[in-house]
Image (cartoon, rainbow, N blue to C red; front, top):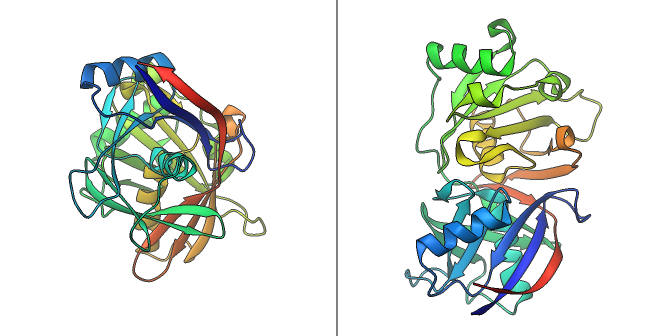
Length: 276
C-alpha cells in the first residue's frame, strides 16, 4: 500500500546538517512488526508513524521506532513529525498542536516559524550510582575526576548524563560502543562564555541501535530540566550537538516559567510516498 512519506531534517535550517527523521504520514493499519521492519530498513535513529488519536485531547498519535525497537517518546521525531503533518495539511483545533505518544500528551507550539515541544517531566532523576558511573567512564575513556556530576534525566528514554569540564572535552570523547552496552548516555559540557551557544551535547545509544545520535531532543529536554533547576544555564540558551558527526545541530531552549520549550528549525529533504 502506498503511504505518504516525508524525511525531515530537524534542528537545522540546512538539510543534511541536523538529524533526519523518517515520517510515515498514513501509518494506520500497520502492525508493530511492519513498523519495526520499516524502521530497520530506513536505518535512521528514528522512524515515526502518524496515526489517528485515541485521546480526544490530541490531534494525532505518534508511534516512534529506532532500528532497535519502539520508544515512548523522542524529541527530534516529535518536531519533525509535527512539521511533516502540518506540511501535509494537518491543522489543530487548539492554540497548540497536541501529540499523543507513549508517555501521554505532548504540546507543540509554533513561534516565528520554529516548532518547540514542552519538555516532559522527568520520570526518573537523581544521581547515577557510582558503579554505573565507573563502568560508563571506562567505556568512554573519561576519568572519574573529570565528571562533576552524573544524573538520570529520564523522560521516556532511559538517559543518564555525565557533566564534563568543557564543550571541547565532550567533543574529544571516543567511546567504546561495545563496552557501553545497553546504557543510554549523554554528555554535556559548557562552551566558553563569549559564544552564542551555552553547552555542547553528545548522545550514545548503541543498545537501541543508535551508536551516536546526531541531535537529540529528549536528551536536551532532560538536560534542560536538570540544569534549569539549579540555574546552571540561563532561561534561554542554545545547545549545539552533532559536530563530532559532521552535523551542526542547534537546539533552542526557552524556560517561560511554566514550561521548558525545546525547539529547532526543520526542513523537508524528501517528500513522496512509500510502499509498505
